[in-house]
Length: 174
Image (cartoon, rainbow, N blue to C red; front, side, top):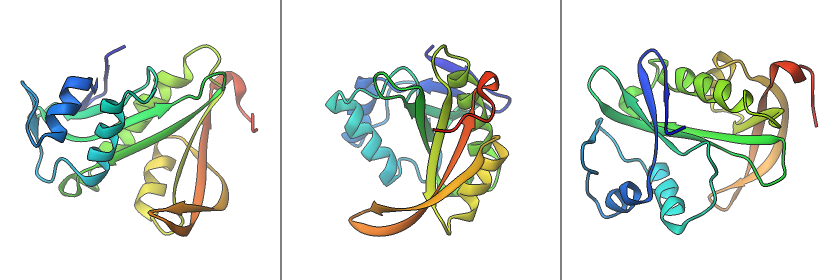
């Protein structure tokens, strides 16, 4: 599926050519960007797309605001080969924070991914103190699982893990 629709957004699969144009400082044909786009995270994601990293059939997707057609961020879910667990990530440009776009997009992506055969759960991680991101995950139906150490930008950080399971696997944990 190349698009997932929500009430206020269209999630459109990112193509390699679009990623190349973005990395070159341009705007892909037929697209427009919200203020603040692309972010540093966006450029990291586009580098992976251009490099041909196997990100799978669940993104990354551009988050496109229906009201004006502007790209406000991206979202995706990687599922490692042979795994029943996906790993979601998302980013919304700062001028669009606090408007519910990330929760709406994450909810739609989780619904789509967890409806696929063989996918039991999707997890997402954020910094312990990143309350807004934690709220996004909670509003999308994810539940807190645990806190653990991780590395971000070369530094040791405290992370929290959230998950949402497929309806037929409610209560499943690994």
